[in-house]
Image 1 (cartoon, rainbow, N blue to C red):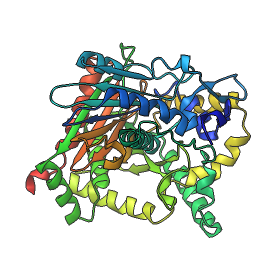
Image 2 (cartoon, rainbow, N blue to C red):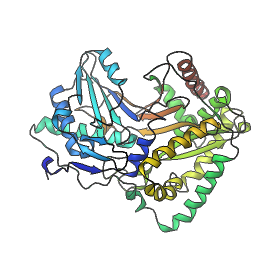
Image 3 (cartoon, helix red, strand yellow):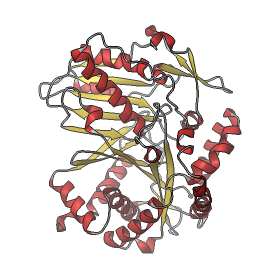
Image 4 (tube, rainbow, N blue to C red):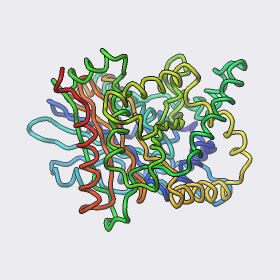
Length: 437
């Protein structure tokens, strides 16, 4: 098969439509930044970026929204002028980071290359409606793989992935029927956790004054990373457990609240964990939500909170995590019209905010494999930017690379709300007693 075989339109999946429906709540944009000790070849990089649009055809599309039956529609070369930027200006690089994602005009990712004397940087901007964090890393891997092939074979053209599923059905096929009673029971428990009690302590942001988000980046690396890992290992806790416990600890002290009954945090699960290769058949969204609830009296100090978190996550890890809402709700959502889906999701979230029943979000976007960002050589650092939540929501993202953890958030404000978010993150990191290690 060749690029000539790529169809002009590609059907959308349920996950695509759900993410589009969530656009008023959150800017659906995931970004990956990498810093190198060496220079990159901009001409070869552009060629790799351009070929990636054909290697994974949905990336070379715009979202054609007719209000009833949206499709992915392939773009002509003339519509790809903003696909790639190569610059020597740090200001231009940062401005690119802050640009809106462009779902309706496409393509579904863009890349900026910064040439600098101390080593080049790249920023990959991906439309979340087409791919989640796992998909973003896979896109980076497609580009870096093509970049490497072009070094030895300048005429290389990848074969388009025309048959790779972008649907949740690739997960369904891996779940045994005997798991469904457990999944159904988990869903019932999840509904109770989400609604009893109603009032939730969370980070609710006031309306901001900025049109574009300001990003907060906090990195834990070097000796602090190893101290943190050792502290968790001694207590049977993962890095994710420790950061979730730190999030709860910070909520106890800094959250704006509609009642102190409980604290809720919505996390994410990459469903690729259920696939043999831990990789989707096509570039897509394969993530699900997993809520956690903790009473304030279980968060007296970090160590107490961590013990409770390890207990909660341990139970979920052994009981089909991420599948409760996904397996039981997706059949219903598939039969709802696209217009109704958009209205229902926004109404649900707005009602949750008005009742102070929605928790803040902590999404673990996972480690970035070196192979996904190896452009001739591996970068010295790499991280992901979480989609910025529109007020009053608050989302924090976690990503890892080698011996570094990065926390990110995007806030639509440059004053009080930005300072509040920075203070929250510092309170969260400061609650981890790594100085004892």
